[in-house]
Length: 386
Ligand SMILES: Cc1cc2nc3c(=O)[nH]c(=O)nc-3n(C[C@H](O)[C@H](O)[C@H](O)COP(=O)(O)OP(=O)(O)OC[C@H]3O[C@@H](n4cnc5c(N)ncnc54)[C@H](O)[C@@H]3O)c2cc1C
Image (cartoon, rainbow, N blue to C red; front, top):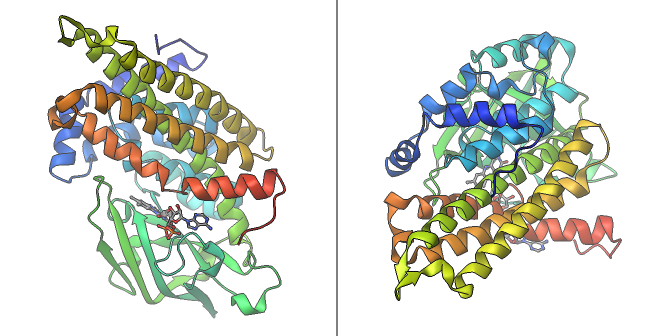
């Protein structure tokens, strides 16, 4: 029922086929041991899925964000977690749309072949949080180098990436006319940086998600690692964030279908009071409602991806898709846990693992409140609140 064929069926079938080699037990074990799904990410890379957005001339498959989102959706729908590798998809977009020809030739073919991993993006800081334009990490030009000082927090997959996209201030906030100006983005080669001005401290967290605190102490990087024009980094990052939000919406939709499928099957089988619990409308309705909400969010996700691929403004749609999908997957997660009764809490059912994983998307990469505030101000024209 939740599996209506669409025009992306070939991609879905191929990704499902790969994912079927990594069943629930695989992801459960990774979660239990707080490990990283190396074998799974390697298999995805070898099959070319993580190079979906790289144009063919650079060794990728030249697909759009729409197809990339289907890949991420299928991973989550299979019971896995794209959070281990989705960074490669949206970070690529930043390099593709704003990197120089030289940078693209240097990095993209190696990323496509799997020789290099671009899994990390460093934006969030401990003292400024969501208020990104106040970031305190600075990059100061000194001859043919930039010298970086500051701190980042919650930066994911640094230990499983070779490269990171970093947002830093190149002009002090006090010297710019608009607070969104004066920030720049850089490619940091983590292999050279760690131990040479960059310290990485892992953060243990509720989800088994590899994320870290980063300390920059006079880290020097080549000036040629600046992406695009100095001072325009915030604008470039926003472009990448629209891709990120759309992909994460697709992951939530994959989760949403997973929860609906699991709980539907369970309530059909589970007999209490001499009948399947799914015969009770008190059980049916929350499941039906969450299915409806996943389906509706799915439409907005495809609209956001279509606009992104057509180079049309897509900020509103990407944000709305992320909010709708995160809410729908969380609602489906609650119904799934609830109707599994006590068994929902048992690790061997995988419900509690997926429940924790999907909860993250109410907060990261952008909290629900911040999306509401964006829509209120930028779409509805309500007065600025901050
Ligand atoms: C597992 C994980 C992985 C992450 N990976 C990355 C990464 O790879 N790279 C990266 O740069 N960042 C990453 N992040 C950071 C993430 O993007 C931030 O946690 C998120 O944007 C929220 O920022 P904050 O934690 O500083 O919350 P804060 O900004 O402190 O906000 C806390 C809460 O307050 C509310 N709030 C704040 N301001 C307002 C307001 N004006 N109006 C209404 N409500 C408000 C929101 O509900 C918000 O959830 C990750 C986070 C997690 C947990």
